[in-house]
Image (cartoon, rainbow, N blue to C red):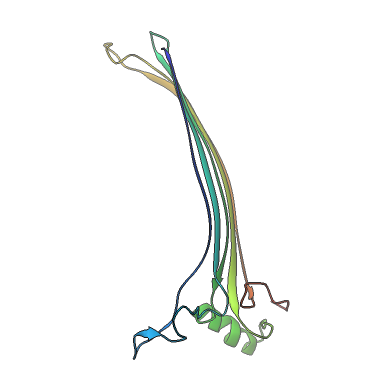
Length: 167
């Protein structure tokens, strides 16, 4: 009865596509027709997240010893269509005219974004009983986190595969 342990886990694995359509301002209907995606590059979202948590306590009768720890993991790979965005116009039209890089034909600019993150936390506490004249806490906390975020601008076909070229 002096020991309490709680373990919990949150896990999510999402694979989806964007379903944005362009509307005709005059008719207020999809410009390319119903159920038609207007993106030159098919946007995809792939996100995996896991958070494992541990919470425990032990009553020493003169104090309580507690431990709280967690491990979090995120792996995300997304592809965004920038064909009609201002970034797409800059890459497609302005960079080549200024002597910059050119996209291969067909010129469908997009951004591939990869994000990986790991986070590990621990906390150890020794606390006095609540009924004493003085209350005290002695503890330590540790956190380690590493992340990487890669973003690549390139040209992609309608299925999201990169088109080889100079950019």
